[in-house]
Length: 438
Ligand code: XLS
Ligand code: CA
Ligand code: CA
Image (spheres, rainbow, N blue to C red):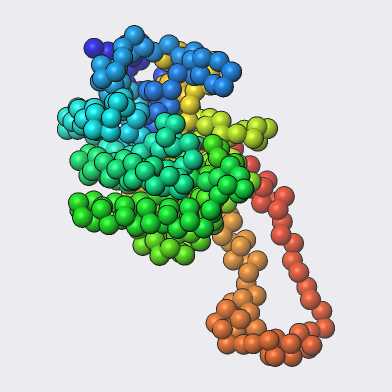
């Protein structure tokens, strides 16, 4: 059975191509610094947005027209698996990611839910045998079902904590079974609505207890993959505990979890936290904590999580800059946690959207690589901080001085001369590279 009959395997045709079903810039085999684009970008399809979402929003029902719409229950889940592998292959993406409830229906009991999951996981495993597609990460959805209304591991109700533990236990087993590269924790409702009814300390301590139990269980079953925290400041709760990378890092440090966790950074969550995408990537990178990326974009005019496909070349370039500076993504990838707009309801739009995102990130990669090669920013930054490479500056960074000596030095200064930060010049250079690299 074919689900996307009108679409053939997407090929690289180059920037001159007018074929909407072709890559213009993403050429999986093209090498950049000895690595192929496919290896560097590690694209992943998000199962939830592509196969389970239907375009509904708080004001209206779904609009998407999908060839599996007429099915229900496990039949629907199976059709989605078939469709997903067809799409992965046609798009030539090396990875995918899912929540447990995206791939299989919840039963009336936990046991039944797990049994459903086993059926679909076995089917996915079979498909993976003959496909190059690997699982970038899986996760447990602990935010949709009403039982999580007050949180999962941070719920005031210990039964919910226990239920959530059972879900993650199963999730880790699934990760092991399917050879996942990472396991993700997004704190869906791990936060609070109002402090008036919240024991914040207990909730955060419990969250840490939960993570330690997850680490212990992964060790027990021999699942040796990075755990990724995905920061988000708000939505659905008013305040989420893993607000941004800096907050998440302080949490991991306080609770002695930094050896096991890194971050999965989503562009739109950065925007919601009042940061740029590159700020979050930089914060993770300089702390050795950049694990993976949810490649999407938000809308600065809207205060919520719009999960758009990442077509902003400027942002993608600065993101790829951080990723290249990080030495790549390691076991992480660029997961399109992005949904087609409600008005883009055709099945073909799923391809247009992914092609748009893949091409836009390929451009970002090329431009960022050239910026690094030519030391455009590095050269400038090096020069800007050069006072720390000699004299008093060197003494400061080498810890060889103190307030008394610095005071004596300052008293002897006749003039302090600053140099321009050249912001506008640097922005003009980025524009020039964006226009001229390809
Ligand atoms: C929601 C999050 C979610 C995570 C996985 O805003 O982006 O989809 O990526 O649970
Ligand atoms: Ca995400
Ligand atoms: Ca999101």
